[in-house]
Length: 173
Ligand code: NI
Image (cartoon, rainbow, N blue to C red; front, side, top):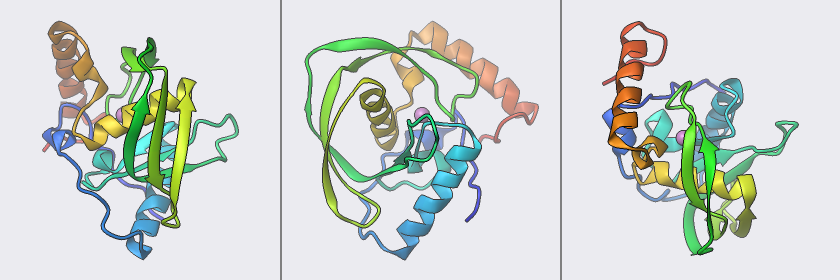
């Protein structure tokens, strides 16, 4: 296993739209292992392949207290979402140190392949639902700060560009 570099906003690579995973093979299994290791090491609850500069539809998550219940979503597809929405505080490994509120659907229903390539239906609400929506946005090239006001977003951009210049987070391309 290997730790991967997490790219940070406002790196333009975060706006790449991911392609479907063509086959759940050994390469994907290795990528899943590396992404899980990277996510746990960074103390994150979710990581999309986009964030490690791999532009394929793959997400790893773990919202459990014990950090021992990984969830792998390959080629996730939204089947349904509730009309009720809620503001939730979010953070992102690609936007270190920044937390802000985003409106998300309360409940969702998705279909995805698991690590073995089997199709699964997942109904989610609460934190799991928020995380899945956040991570699925990454696969579309969208970072949560894009829901915030331009003023807030520019402040975040400036702050992170400074951190990148000072070498505190991964360099921009
Ligand atoms: Ni994120």
